[in-house]
Length: 604
Ligand SMILES: [Zn+2]
Image (cartoon, rainbow, N blue to C red; front, side, top):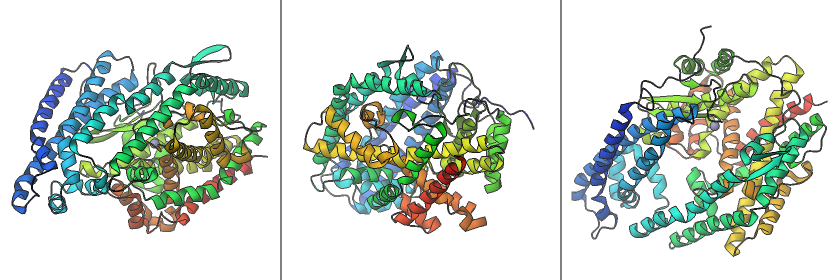
């Protein structure tokens, strides 16, 4: 086998962070933003026109929309390439000075593009139906049809242009200020673990130590640190949720939106679907609880909150996959499903589109990104030869495959919501996990894979739902008034009790402070899309054998539609299943059930 490159090659875009072409591109983008602002200026008057639009105006206005749209797409792609390039450099070397300097400039340009096109956006959301029909009938603008149709469902929640601008302006130092305060706190808080003073990120990593004493010290240390700032975090959660409730009230003059309806709209799912998924998961919460019990048996402990990230007993030993062997293994597993997907994985490595070489100063974590023009995916991760690394590689290659099958679609048909973003990645991971399990020759190897599956079942079927229940309780309590830190603890305890029941010896009552997701200013109910993605992907995987040879074609078409349909429509169209019904979710839960039984069968 040829030696595969383990570092990426992005030199086709720019030669490096000191390439003079970067400054030239930034200048060009600045000039294009000026053009965009000029092109969008006429729409300010069209937002609240004195007279309704008449047919005679259509053609001229349509031409203006088309020109502005094309300019925006071109500028966004140019900026997209530059942003991907600069972040690719920073991922590999966080100390790269020129890239660090460019980063805020690019963020600023991105904000300037949305400001320049704000009037066009509001116009498109408000314009009457006759003109909207003309827009979606236009060959150039047709790519906007799903996205606009979807956003226009909440037309009645829009305020006047002046009020919209006021909210956006005030939110920078209001709503977002609270989120920033949380980020700052979590970056500066320290705790003591095994005699060392460490930051919270380091302490969090120690939660996966094989040594239970270290795990316990890390968990207690993190919680003591947050306890010392409990009132501050309570103020943050109250401010963020209070802001959202007030904004919903102000927007709700015609129709008061339920907080979950708003979230479902962002996730492009029906409220019925969310309810069916949560109810089906609650019915089967014993699956996650059984996984926790099985893992406790292996470790000979009664699981406590500090054991949730405990590794399997033999995890310390290196598994010694070479990068070549890992790519080969993943490509073969993909190939058994469909040859094209296997060839694609190989191509990603051969073309130098993956950066996985462990080097100093590189970022932690793994992600898949892509250049905008030409549309090419890239994967960043750190490969050190563990089985976990192989699964991460499979996961990210799944994301890349999702991008790849949408490659020829117009830009606005490629934006999929968070609920559908993990479909292809978890699907790919499942393919490889199944292959690994089949190949595993010793009980230890089998246990490692089964352990990962058990850990996923615990996170998705218990932890994420507990977050959901907590957030619901929080929003409802906030509607009545300020929720003090002690009450937040109580709400969190109740939420954990509701899902974990007796499978844990105690509950994580400071989780509202330690989990950053509750303090994200921009988005409420950040967590259930993960459960959705996990079960949704398994639900699709469950159809694989049923459709046999036809399945790959169906799956590819399904992925291609994730940017231009609701989740319900995607599944109905391609698999004739209704995700509003508990039955769809039960089939996914059956798969998790079998995986947990597999773990139990390995626990003597
Ligand atoms: Zn992912």
